[in-house]
Image (cartoon, rainbow, N blue to C red; front, side, top):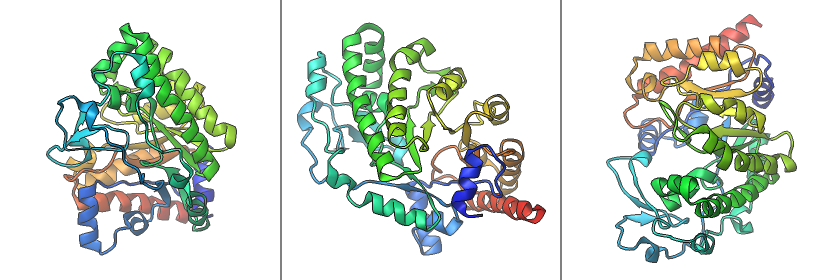
Amino acid sequence: MTNRENFFMAMSHRQPEQIPFFIRLSEELEIEFERRYHTADYRKYYGSSIVPVKIRPTEHLQDFSAYFAGQSYDYYDEWGVGYKAGSTGYHFRQFVSPMKFFETPEEVWDFPIPDILEDYRWDGLKETIAELKALDCITMNTSGCNIDIFEAAWYLRGMENLLMDMLVDEEMAEACLERMCRIKCEMAKKCAEAGFDIVVFGDDVATQRGMMMDKKLWRKWLKPRLKRGIDSAKSVNPKVLCYYHSDGDISDIIEDLIEIGVDILNPIQPECMDPIGVKERYGSRVNLWGTIGTQTTMPFGSPEEVTQEVNRMIECVGRDGGLVIAPTHVLEPEVPFANIEAYVKAVKSKWVENTGNN
């Protein structure tokens, strides 16, 4: 059985020969990996056949400096979101929002957006995806060809401002969320047209204690827009898998996500959700991706504990298919390489065990 056949068997809730797995390293770990192993392609080295693909970077970075109104920043991205560098890595940056001081919806609609839908950004993508599929890989879009609705809106507007808008200034909330939704829908179509196996959606809408907003608010503002994005992708290719990411405890909206067409739910954080319980309740209707804790097991467990947790998740959550086992987020610099090796070895040991039983 090929990697692709095995993956799609798992995603159709049938027991695969091998549990698919995924891994993503932080920039710091990527550098250390290349130093240790003299190659930059860690996914190929470890044998993960799931490959994220980016579109081309912009050639026309706009000048957003006028939007920061005295706010300090180190740099800004193509969307105009400013950043202050933190102590380390991607997750320790401070956001500086260019729409923070906007007072009218018209300002939101007039704000310049990047040329992310222009054809030159997508040139060659179909060919790259076709080549990867010919190499028996599974393809998914990633940063550079992904925009999320709630997160993109609050990056631009500011978290506190957007949440207040959703409560007391509906015209401003409508402008912020609707503008991002329309872009997301077009990008979802482009991703499906390019031939991605998986189209990624995601908005962090929960903390580890539950939803960060009332679920009624989520259902009013975000659920219908997420559905439009999913429908956009599936209008091009009904078989494309729609993957939804939200950190935190999203138990309150899993049923809603299944209802609007989510095929894969990520990351099922074991620190705040019970992967086995989620599998038992929803596992026949949605696939799970993740389950290995990046706040607990991967950084602070021993290699033996990593192995035990991988075995437990494969046996309890991977039964009857429906699982891509993976750390629940990018592996940060404090994760020991011994634990990364133990994770990969444990997954592959189960492969050998399953092959031997067939």
